[in-house]
Amino acid sequence: MNERRLFELILSIKRKCQAREDIIQNEIGLSQAEFNGLLVLEPDECIQGFHFAERMGLSPSRGSRVLSKLTQRGLTRSEFKPEDRRSVTISLTPEGIDTKEDIIERMQSCEEHICSQLEACHLDQIRDSLERLDKVL
View 1 (spheres, rainbow, N blue to C red):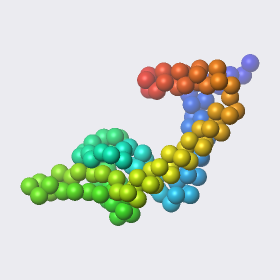
View 2 (tube, rainbow, N blue to C red):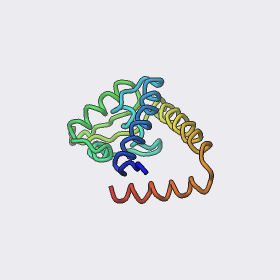
View 3 (cartoon, rainbow, N blue to C red):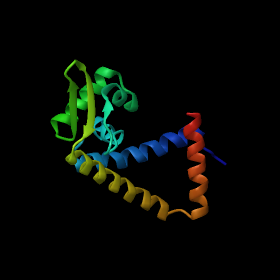
View 4 (tube, rainbow, N blue to C red):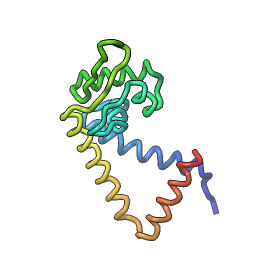
């Protein structure tokens, strides 16, 4: 039997998920960085700029550039402390919350399609395996 290596399977799944993510990004009109930036923010939170960069896995300067783009689009709000202009607090605007909800709905639709193609017992096994894989990576 010609079995693919685990890493090859992961890359294949990644490519397919990335293709779907690209479609969602294009439909909503976001860059990949903006898309990911919205996903790391919760509607009811205010976080420090350095936490935003950490959540995205970016350097503070790169995180700042992504944040600037989101703020220019009206999706996030940045508030600077008067005593320290380097310290910024970030939150989603109402438009940002709506856009994130749209992203989540589209992702759920994609997940529903995946789930409709699998039996419930397989779904549980897949979720368990993906959780384990996520922990070791």
